[in-house]
Image (cartoon, rainbow, N blue to C red):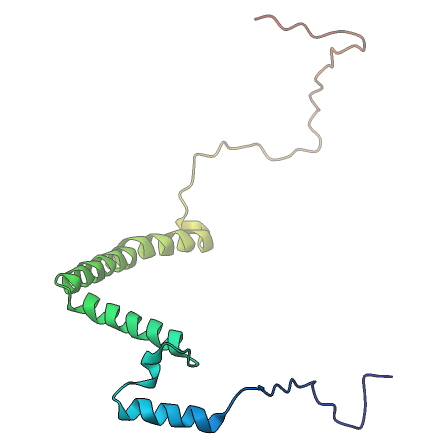
Length: 145
């Protein structure tokens, strides 16, 4: 039963200690770069999230440029008006027809009656009509065009 244990097991951890890393030296260099007017992001070094931030800023710039573009509001207006007309058509034309179909299905008196051939009532004492079977085994059917 290796699944249940009263002791909490911790995941294996990776402990990496760089050999040639001096945090004091890096802090000094960063302060000097700030004093010289250089930004630490402009040095070309990777900082976590640098590319994600750049992509997000590019998307936001593209959106603002697209919203400023002329005619974007008119296209949206045309699209919304076409959707409103489609909805109006569905509500005014198709829905009443569907309602009529369902009403005819539930109310048999409303269904149009086709001409029905009046059949005679079943008479159990009437003679049966017997139709002879002319097929004899071994005969082949001949189809003439």
